[in-house]
Image (tube, rainbow, N blue to C red; front, side, top):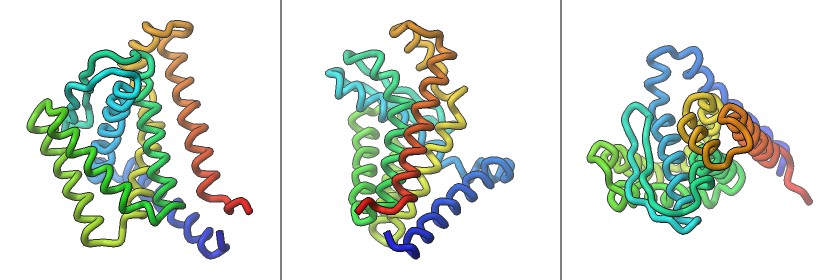
Length: 222
């Protein structure tokens, strides 16, 4: 990667960090309202992570719910309970890191990946229908994604922002967001109490994110 391009990428990454941190910690009520799309997007990644883990382990998904307050749930049957539970927190972190990496380093795939996300939201809205509220939220997101890919050239910036902001949110939310999943996971897997698994999951996400940032911000190997 050329020095100028690398410097530009570093600046874009730190700009995202500054915007998210500024809104979250110093933006007050207005800042948190502006971050509502990030919160809802993370909820979708979390619930879709459960759904993907369910399908990959032989189960089937019956419903996905996304609530305006950022809560949500996935209803499913079959599959591996432990992997499905990990799919929410760990899976959403994997998705967030992937989005950030593609937006930063594989920019020609950014429009395709954004469209795929929009399609997955439409599928979730109709095939895994649970409430009209959830369906409207997902369809509005899908419409926004379509508008970005159809009328702008912001696909890579969109992926970078939502990918990195999602990962930051996931890390901050480790003590709250996956609490019910952690207790169920500890009951199924055993070995450690939920509190210990919470920190194990957090360490996994931090290491994954650190690896992604290293890949993004260092020069390509020759």
